[in-house]
Amino acid sequence: MTGPILQAQGLCVESLGGKESFPVLTDLNFSLQPGKILGLVGESGAGKSMIGRTISQYLPNGFAVTKGTLKFDGEDLVGMAAERRRNLLGRDIAFIPQEPLSGLNPVLSVGQQMKEHLLRIGLAPGENWRERALKEFEAVHLPHGAALLERYPHQLSGGMCQRILIAMAFASRPRLLIADEPTTALDVTIQARIVKLIAEMQKRDGTAVIFITHDLRLASQISDEIMVLYAGRPAELGPAKQLFSAPAHPYTRCLQLANPTITGPRRGLYILPERMPGLRVLKELKGCRFASRCPNVIDACMITEPPFMAIGPDHIAACIRTEATPQIVAPPAVPARDQATAKTHLSAEKLTKAYTTSWSPFAKRGTFKAVNSVDLTLAEGEFVGIVGESGSGKSSLARLVVGLDKPTDGRIELAGRDVTANGASDRAYRRQYIQMVFQDPQSALNPRRRIGSIVTQANEATGTHNSSRERMDRAAELLKEIGLPPDAAMRYPSQLSGGQKQRVNIARALCTLPKILVADEIVSGLDVSVQAQLLDLLLKLRDEHGFSMLFISHDLSVVRYLCDRVLVMYRGEVVESGRTEAVFANPQHPYTRSLLAAVPPDDVSLEWSPVLAEAGYQVE
Image (cartoon, rainbow, N blue to C red; front, side, top):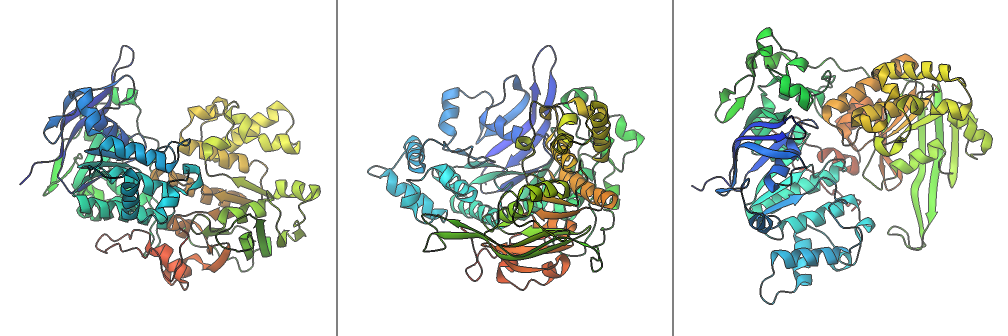
């Protein structure tokens, strides 16, 4: 038997800034065998990516390993000479970053970057780098490899850029691969392709993989073992399928219940209260790190940090009440609304948006229809989901509804008024009637304005609540509705978390009490706990204000939980629509079946075999 390729024993990492030190990773013990996959799961700030940084010794300034060992194939990575570490990284230890575009140089062509990487890891005598690059592209199922070498990263989709990075990572036949959230915010079909591809290459080369993700369901399908991290310390470690089907730690159970289901009976989402404790709080904390958020907490949990309890073979959990974990249950599902008698807020008929292009992959005459003859209705209080891969026309349809683009053909009515022409009076009417919440909360917020000013921007545009006192009062009302403290009004966006920023975006959209919200991928890339909080907030606000919503998302489980009806789009057309539960339970169109098959099942006993291309329906 061979030994572990990677082994951590009592590993501790601390922040050493100033006169004080703060714990970042504590008491980390694990071993990874060759050819196995270890999933690292937890919320943002749990320490998942810090483990990857520790392996590469690319820790931020002021961070250092203070205790324990971390060995790669018997060599201690902590005390390793810099030259030896550089020789390992990129060859024996490879990385796949979360953001594919950030992992590629925007000013160099794909060919230039492949050449540089292949020359660094070494070519066989007489081997041409271009031929080797084409072989690596073929291994990751990238068509037209010769043409790709001439392209720049911005000319390719996110899925293609990620596959290029996978080809580069596996080009050296590494012994250890660290994949840091490689599928976050990708379409479900692209996610399935990337995960399947990593598994194929891992089996081909016998590579050990650390797969970092916030999606416990995805990790359970592809990993051999899962380590659930909380505030820098392992909460639970065990065989993947056993851990997911019968979690022992309450945090693991809460993460599981915070994620909506894609099959089986619909249920509500478990909402984790508060936030993970910060570094300063952790230093002073005496008891369990999860105690302040745990539904099973007792007095003994507040006294000392819990030891690791044996649950089964190779399965441990840091909890003194593991027997109570199965008692944690999610609330009942919010019933779908009956909109038969509700007033229609939005109606669109034969909506079309065509672009004239010098070249198009779909039309010989240089015209591309981003939206093609779409019919859409939205009733009062109704949530309608729009799903499909990137390039299917979801965001283009949203831009037409909001009025950012003018349709080439078709008709749009808001509460019976025709606003298709999109003239000045129509735009003024839309501002009062419809608002949009954008995908990236960071880029949607002005970093130079305080939160109180941001959420009342619509008042400035419409001339309402003119006095500063009126706007301050309105900002306080909005912040209370979205669950932020009153003092958040004086903060700047940089002082808020990603989930809090998205709450601010929602508050700004609700400032003028619109009848319709258009939400474009607003929970994409967020932790499941923050996602559950936002979804619960949207349902609560609907009950209070009665607004309708077009909810654009690639996450089908989220759409199933939140939306009353769903529209499935493919290449600008609606290929299937209906009540969400009926469409998901019995999809009629092959493209819908392909999307649903690409989602990991809730039951780990079922084999995940995504139908990545059925009847020729695929975008890439």
